[in-house]
Amino acid sequence: MSMEPDFYIGYLPQAPSRLRRFLRRVIVAIGFVSVVLAVVFAVAQMPFANSFFEFGRLRDFEGTLSIEPYPALLVTRPGQAGSNAGTSEYLLVAPGKHGADDLIKKFAGKEVRLRGQLIYRDENTILEIEPGSIRPLSAKGREIIPVQDFGSLTLSGEIVDSKCYLGVMNPGNGKVHRDCASRCLSGGIPPLFIEFASGKTFLLVGADTSALSYKDVSEFVAERLTITGEHILRGDQDVLSINPRELKHSD
Image 1 (cartoon, rainbow, N blue to C red):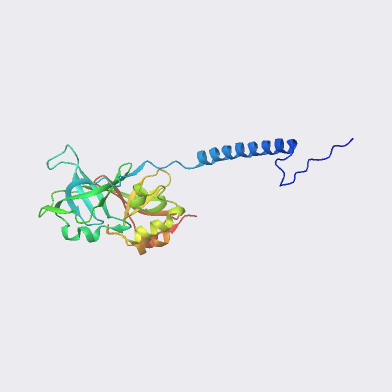
Image 2 (image 1 turned 90 degrees about the vertical axis):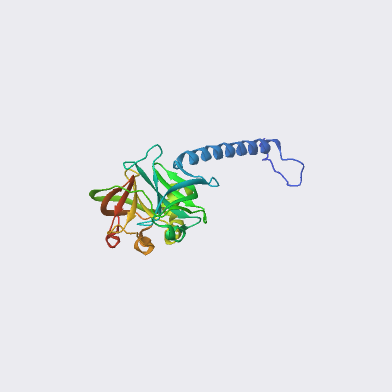
């Protein structure tokens, strides 16, 4: 005697027992597979970089304002004083996707006190200035940045905007970040070059160590590049001086 298959009519109070057991097993299996896939995808994701933006935490800083090649605050390292004191150079940016040129230009070369929020990753630090917080302390600043030239260097990597990469966005590089990086760089945020092999960060400047404009690098933002330039150590900041007309995509 053959057994008739279960047949369920939607308006009945419940499905036949065999159909209920089958559906229960299917639902449990789907749930298990979903959990496994979620764990696999989570593990496969790249970990977030060890970068920070102290949003909402305003600090006071004192130092000398420099406008070349990019706006920066030159600060004597804690615990050091005198003519041989070490100096750190904090790149400066304005709130949003803007450089700090307009905020500091009338204070360039002066010793000042200002307020800002730190952005940092590894040994690289940027300071987002609170507009209107700059107060001059003396007519002339005292900091001198030592400069060392290490000669020509050829690297493979990509160009990013310093503000996002160092802490405001995570990740702050790659093609997913390209549009944001382009807007930041066009607004005056200093460009960085990230070497793929080591993850080392270089501040990009022109062949005469002047600031690069957005049009110099716009075609190459977040693209894989081979780049050759002069490696300069400015204080504790690695700088790469390049001729932007020689930029080329990697194969």
